[in-house]
Image (cartoon, rainbow, N blue to C red; front, top):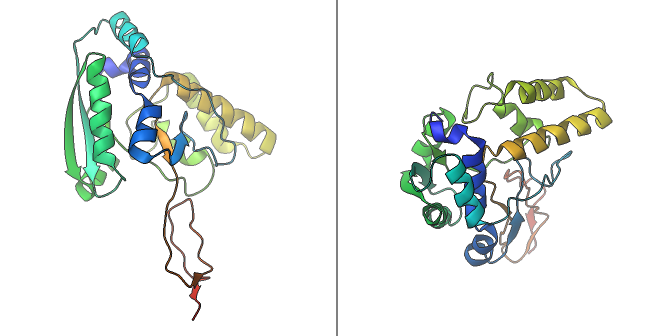
Length: 231
């Protein structure tokens, strides 16, 4: 938000190429998840894999140099405590990867409640570490966030061409057409690189012996109406 350098797509793509997501997923999370390459989670209907930004620090440095920012870009990266598993450690590693390609990164940590209020209010400048849970199982939950009419989390606004596609997707209900538009919107957002795409972690949980009928939901809602304890 309000960072001139980040309005250059080369800079945003450079940040994606700067982070070794495979190493972080393996070393921080023991491989318990998979890489995410787009704004829509892989299990959501109409989700596509638009392709990966490979870890390539040399390419990241080249893109930054082409944007006139060789070893001169300074960013603040915001992270929270009490929300994301190993989130602070992940943010520290990401900041180190940014530093390696010449992006001087100031990591700031806030308690989750205050962090989320500021995040929703579009109060952060530069970059923040955030994850969305798609509670409606449709790409619209994420795609709508890139329209200028969306009231919260306004950190990247689609250009006119993409905004037109996003609006069309809102009003189309035929499955074939909806799938095509969803794919086009996801690919365009991937190419514009509004986020540094990271990963989708497994949902790991434990149950006490004897608990039956409980199922973990991927939308993070915990419902126990069908759970019971065998005695």
